[in-house]
Length: 102
Image (cartoon, rainbow, N blue to C red; front, side, top):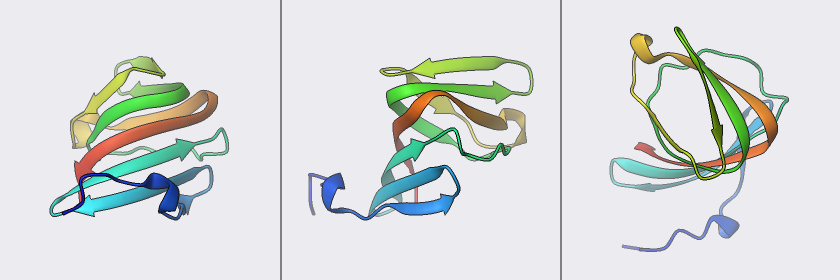
């Protein structure tokens, strides 16, 4: 079992315009490096996220509030419609590292 993830050796995947990511899966978990640009299309997301913003500034809109995140800030969003959210790049690109269910 590897203990180190070499993100430099992993290819970028682009699931949508303005978003690209690199992932490493271990059992039921994955470590995902994500880059967001201001080209990202606005969309609501109901997935959970737990991680850290590494670079840039991101604004996340929830149903009842807007929260800004910058480099060094932790992000914890629970799954489901009650915690739906929409991200927008304020200053970027934004790089984030997330630990997620695979």
